Length: 243
Figure 1: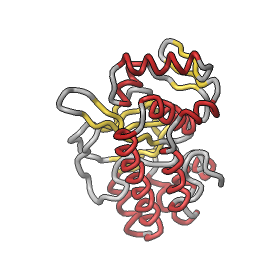
Figure 2: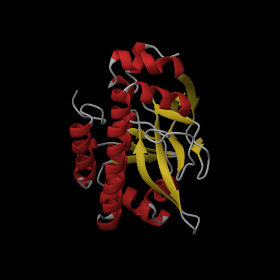
Figure 3: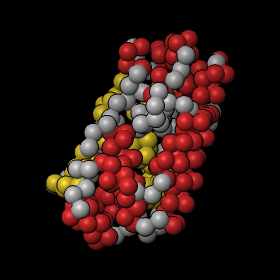
């Protein structure tokens, strides 16, 4: 069972009023997941809703006929995966994988539906979060269409460390390339350029951000647009958004 202190580790849960959190609390269980763990595969029945806690971060991937998987959005402590708005156990469309391991709250979708039915304010909170998720998807589509690989790589790294809460991402160059839907050689060239400029350091299986603000200056403004929408719809929930 969750505690009110641990509620703060999920920004989305922390946005609930105490009475609404009390409705959901008995159904929450704690699970630990590692980087690379798959939460849903396309077509899987979504039986649980997962809420990342603290530095835990997940990604949604769309798998193409070519075999390539392209990352669409990141989900950290600001959000949830699975059964956020829909009623019943519906099939997953995209693959959901853990990028940065840690603790999660898990609640059966059936109980989540019961709580949303009993409390319009809970249903409203998750509906507003779903709107913010769609904003991320829309922005991601536009970003992939018009922004340079360098801008997108910087944007993605900033989005990841904002959620993780430290300047280190556990990730290989191959994984970064897959996340962005580009070839490994393109990702390698961008990272080498960032290294020459003193923005990042690389190690086996990881990337460390050396100059966060300079890297932020290389990024496109997509993160800021999404954060602004979160601020309007779910004030204080997006990572880095003032409380």
